[in-house]
Length: 307
Length: 307
Image 1: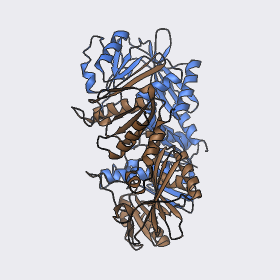
Image 2: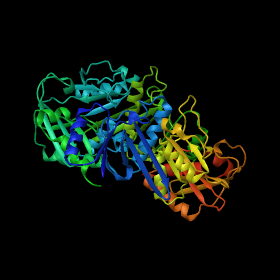
Image 3: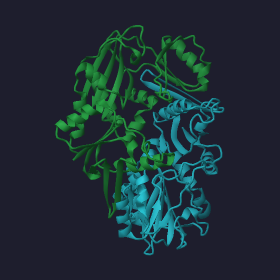
Image 4: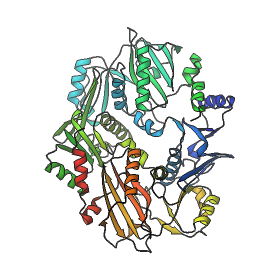
């Protein structure tokens, strides 16, 4: 049975997983949905109470019934490289491809439906509570009065985006920024704003969860730095996962129906890990590079399991 | 506890459900996500392992913890009526609103995650098979040779869109169209195409499922007419649901995790009902108008149940 890897052409991280699968002798097809229609072709017949489908990428052909797993890594938008591009071709290609693939018995890392739900940050925070993580007090609001009250209560604050990346071209990552409790909050009426209690940070923790395998890495924090994505100092080192965190991660992943998740924590001066977010599509290449943790190998092994 | 109705301002069908809820004495808030931020405001605080949120629409304020149900009817795009519109405001408002609402214990008609999956037509066809419906033989393909082979096997064919509406402005509904098996199919390489065995139709059947309640209506078909959405003759009349269809509908709704679905069937000359599609957001006002079936009342009753 075959592993399907959905990603763009230039993806060095995917290359490591692919070569591990090749070493394991597992058949695989790698394709970019942006190449449908064109380099990628598909066909599925629904007849006689049964379903037979095929995907073709270049000269490789795979039967949908023989897919053991699908890895949604960095897929392009269906139709994006079609000879005649249009919203219509994108809609038709997207429906055809994902409609067929979600009709199969394959295991997903991650299933598009679970991934869509897991992207909602307010939902993440609530699930993090339910899973037993420590979660910094957080407010999402369009009420200036509530923002002022939250700031007065917590004093030491950061502001973040609710949705993640700013949809510029190219998309911008907005840094988490510390703000004064005396800020003029009248502007929150113009757009939902996320305020969070600032956790004084000894270190950043990145915990990558692949099925049942947890890989945690720690990077000592500069006390002046708030958003580690914009820090250029320090190196990631492997760290043990506390038992309570391990249980919470399992509980979160199971409730969210995710096979892969990249958790960010802030480690406070007492050594406690505070949940910041879980990115269901988070990068892991930079962690593996610095820590030698075999994350790509764990992904390959997960994908290789027969359903 | 309160019912939340998400729909646009001018929605006569929603008006009937709302007035039924008012007759039942059930508190409700109706709002259009397009009015966030602005007329609609929100706030949620995640602290002390708990979650408290509020939605405000005009002068009405509702606590998220007191929501018994959410009806996703015809909601506008979040941010669409913001003073300063942008993709950024839409992303932030969408994440904040649906992230909060999916964090509640409310029952959904339909949950956005289930709705997103249920829109995939290839997935619908497969689930229809599994649920025991009769399903016309269907092909979704970009291979001209497979289209030719399917046409040679079935001879009497229709072509449909895979994704539903054409994203023009205004969106266009593309009619299902009969085609000759001798058609030149080379064009399917340019975009996935859905071909289906044509079922000779005695009548169109629209079955509206609301929780455990099924309302079926029948309209005698003109033998020359293929797509009933473009027919102007005939009236819808109530019809009994065959037991086997009833069981299949229950099985489909349960697997799809839907509370509401509008099924379209073709009734053949032997009286058998062939599954064409299940629209999780399908209209019912026109059916209720002609048949007097109390669909809006069933929706109100479903929404009114305490969780």
